[in-house]
Amino acid sequence: MQAGAVLLARALRDETKLGCPTSFNGLLLSASSTSAGDLGSQLQTLNEVCPIPELITCASYAQSLSTIEQDKFVVYEGQNLEWRELNLQSLKPLQQKQISEERAQIDEQASSLITTIEDALAETIELKAARDEQLGQQFIPASTGINKQLLTGSSIESLARQVEQIGNGSEFWALCLYVGDIGELNKIREVL
Image (tube, rainbow, N blue to C red; front, side, top):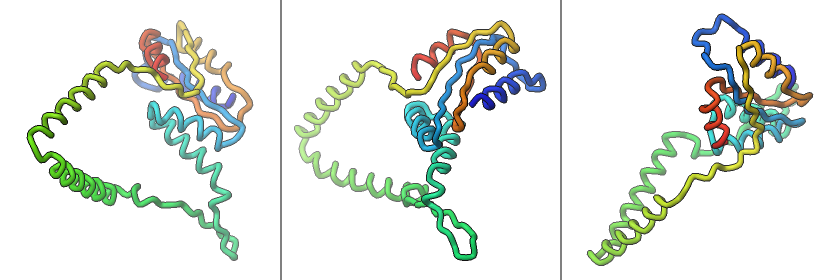
């Protein structure tokens, strides 16, 4: 992980990038582990709450590293074939077909359930109560279990030095750094 922090600091110092921010505060999200499976689990929890594309990729990679040995099929000539379980729901056309069929079933069932005006009025009252309940709910952030560190810097160099100090000897790690205004970074930190 320390090597990753050094690479991240080097990327911060890269002056060839366009669109450098005007404020050099940072919110560093980090996860690390001694095993790929544990890292994948940590990132999966975060990605369920707040899907970040790069961390989704990282979680997939960590999960594949942890399962590759048990999913491997060895052919006698010494060549390896990697097996992957395919869920039919993962294929978009089949998923859309099933959704369409389920909607048709729901429509058919709904049509048979609403037989009188009184039933429709009773359902409207229930829907109104459910809507009122939803409107009364407040947002409570879910616990992601990911490490969050707020870094403050006066320049890109001071922020890069702080990033370099982060890290440990973990072999499996993921880092995500948001740079910008401290107020906006605090808003992100509050919901993660």
